[in-house]
Length: 508
Image 1 (cartoon, rainbow, N blue to C red):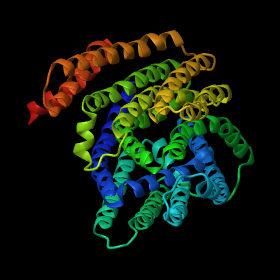
Image 2: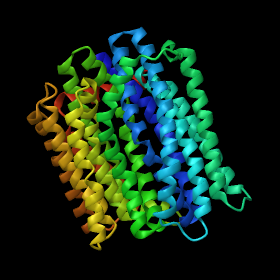
Image 3: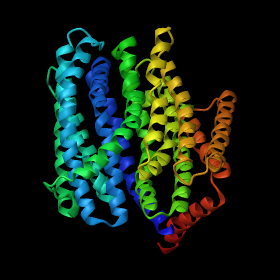
Image 4: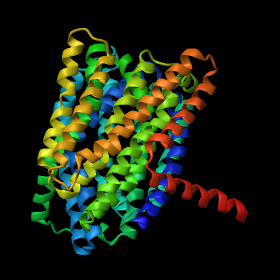
């Protein structure tokens, strides 16, 4: 277990370096894209791209299945089965890609041209961007087994290097867009992102084929494995589709009621959410293979400890960065963007709350997926999450503001979390009471204390925004240390700091 913790820490640091670089470049490129395209075209790209992603429901469910099967076989040490699993997953995704293209060219085009609120004179452009985005998306679908292989092998150094290269390419795209003399920069932007996706797809394929034996394609199709993966994916489809509909579905729903301007605000909030949640996603990406491998080796006690620890730490990592943003959301958005869309401030705050709640379920999902006993789990959790669309539609129809959709999302996320916990305790040797005591109660104490203190501080102290941001950051870390971490976790942190900074400082 100690060796696993060291590996998790090392891999997390690699991903954080990649994330910090990506975040810095991403914040700059987002501002430039908004400036160059304008609010209207930025909103078009956000909603049309979201419509394409809606057709990834089949792919998302299979992605989780592929990740689970590859990691499980790697943990079990079955090399022959590992190679069969890779080739089978690639064959399945070729078929899924074809289905996605058919659905997009029929249902997708009909929905875009009849139901979406696109400004006059931009429908032809929206259709072209839709086609380009579809090809870009299919490239990402075919890359899934290669990405999963790198993650299963926990080779996060290479994963980070390729990700950084991808970010650099996107920076080049944005800088080229800025100096482009083209009459329609939205089309140029979509084409250049397609080029980036193709390059990254080729790099992943070349690396995995060269370094991992199982990534060499076999023409043989393992029919029993296909049935097993598709059966697993069918139930996983419910959970995956529910989350996707919650995000992209609400985006389309907002477009139908309020137009592309609200999509621009939602797009900005989503980018802030993505940047902040990437701090946690890096950690979860490293932890997930360990949870699956511990289940494969039948070390259930260590697996449960890791699930509790990663659930709690996921929320606390979010809190460290959401607290300063909440404290000065308007200042941060104005500093980042020269043109802040209407509604963007409150959208950003509410979406950060929503994703913080959702993050708690990720380690639990991984543990349940490892068992393959996911039918009831995905039906219950996914079914509750799917309520986002009809409930939000009802409230918007009654005249509520666009903020209502995110508030509804937060409430439903809480209900879904507790429903998943009830189901999980019947699938795994898992104590719901221990989870509530060691995870949820600590989270409530810390987040409530931080919120009240920062609210009082800002109400009675008139300090510059940068001071408030620093104070919020310090207060969040302080309460996490005092009330959030357990004694053994504090010892691990202090030991790590002593080893990395004190000893290294003495040596130097």
